[in-house]
Image (cartoon, rainbow, N blue to C red; front, side, top):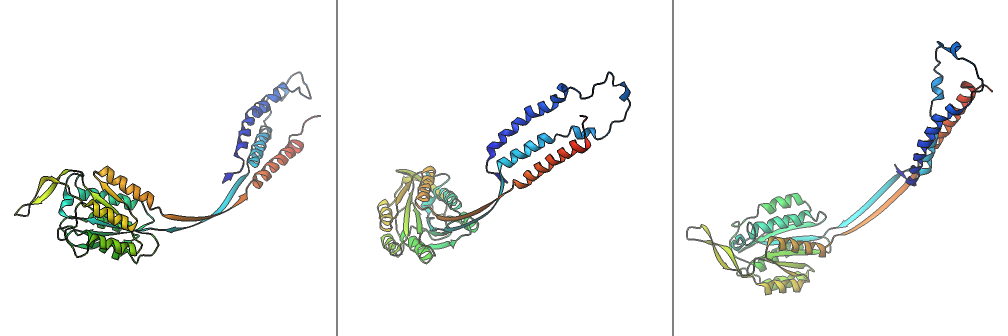
Length: 326
């Protein structure tokens, strides 16, 4: 229940001086019939009618009238919203260089954690996940089931496919997954830390295919500027870390983004990676249409009738039950 004029509840403060006046009034009234002594009435049983005299009818009536002035109301509401979700495929590089430790704990784990945060921050969108190294495959097709997607995201790790960096192939796989998705907005977030060194599809050719399907590609180069600890495999297959220069083909990534109407970003730490996803979130807002309908019903009448009933009852009691001497 809501009130149209809640400011009238301040009038309830008037009940305090009114209550004081009603209590003090009998003490200042002169009796209609004065007697020299009341000893003759001592020992007489008190009738229950005396409680009617103290019934605070005036205070109750005033309180009910204040509620009437405040206009209590109830309402029936109806809301209908339609959401146009954006289709997003994250194409993630999982090559050996993604184990470099310039992002904590390494590039791959940092990219996974921030990617999951991004997915959970956009509940109305459909997401898919493609991973690539020397080859590529779809880890999760486009889905609205974010819980399942997050579980599959967590299972991504180095070594599940042949090593290498096939950027063009990874982008082509992502395009194949998103091109037939329903809805106008189609976005690919391509994340890599290297240069294209394998695969049958050139990155720029894949970008041109994305452009023909109206797919926007945001590219992210992951890695610090300069030197970083990168993993190396020895002859026994064990991973050792050594310092090496970070090499990212930024020119190609910028051209992919430019060709498709997207944007290129460089993530040199976890904080900047989060900021990049935040910027993409702002640029790719979900469209939301909402229709609201509401009807209000006045509820003051019961309070008004109750106040009138108590007032009439009070008059009846004082005229016929608590009769006064003239």
